[in-house]
Length: 68
Image (cartoon, rainbow, N blue to C red; front, side, top):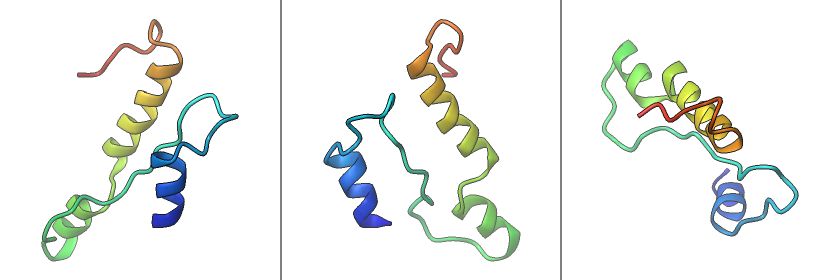
C-alpha cells in the first residue's frame, strides 16, 4: 500500500484519470483502547465524506462549494 501510494500520489502516475487519486489513511497518534481507539485511529464516515467531497469540488466547484 505504501509503494502504491508513493507511485500514484507523489510520482503522479495517474495520467489518464480525471482527478488525482487520494488515499485515506489512519492518523499518526497513540491510539486509545476500546471503541475510542477505533473511532480516532481509523478513517471514519466523516473523513471519507470530506475526501470524496473534495474530489467532487475539484471536478465541479460551482455545484460543490468548499466545506471549510
